[in-house]
Image (tube, rainbow, N blue to C red; front, side, top):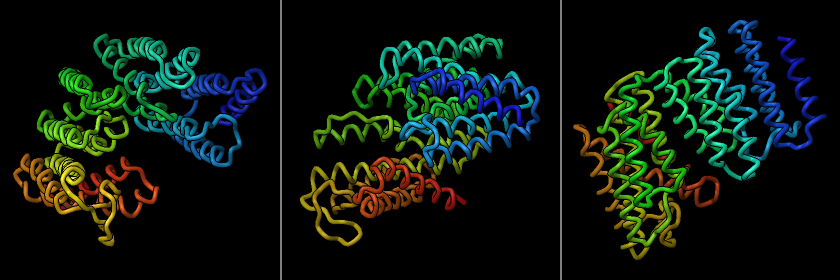
Length: 400
């Protein structure tokens, strides 16, 4: 373990002395540390590797907060998430080196190499050549460790999609998490899920409901929701997307939903679907519907209220505010929210509870909007995610 610390220190000194470009030095250091992890995995016990990852997660967090190193870009969490990702893979697959390296090599090598190549073309965003590089390298790693051509194709395409939409160093963690998830699915039904998720994402892009990154994120999230729960889970979300897009037209909104809106609206359902893969339960489907009902109620309230109400009132003190103000409510908007919640609630036999929780989530969204979003403490997407998550949690508690 001491030798590993010496190796890391030597790697940092090397890149600081010989590589002057900050971006290139970060990526080279990423690769050097990855090589060190691979070598160490043959000499360290699982417990020692876990301790090592935990130590570096804490050290990197302190280094970022105290601005000790030059390797932490503002808003980039890659240095913290790197050892955290290794920690997760170590806990799950350390005793199976093939699967251990399969989950780590795309993050270890595909990611920094594609960034180095892509950066030559565009320094501010992901590039096609960079993504193709990631795809090619990940496919090679996958075919070597899995010896399964079809799996390798699915694995590499899926991880390339994850890498493309990830920002702020999140790809370090997400690549490893999705690698583990894909390894644990049954390939044949997952292929069907991928096919239909691709169709949904493609149609959404065709109708300009989503921008490109949002479409790819929909493909990723939709694949697992379809695999986990089938169309029973997806149709309520699709209905929400279609109706929400239609209602947006009432107020002449021409903006497409972006990546963060897709995560805010579909994130909790994705988490519930992952749980449903490992612990199938109608309770999780019920919670999923509660979350979607809450979002649909909020969207109906917002769009119908904006179009047809003359006045709006802040939910916390009922003082008149401009229409569209975070936390603002109106009678017509509230009635619209009731309709939105009712539509989604009909997908479950205990529809009345889904209906009530949907309205509850809508009101919670308005209260959070008034207290935090209106003052700039939270974004609208975060408000939506919190309210839908609370609705799902309430659904779990009330299910039994």
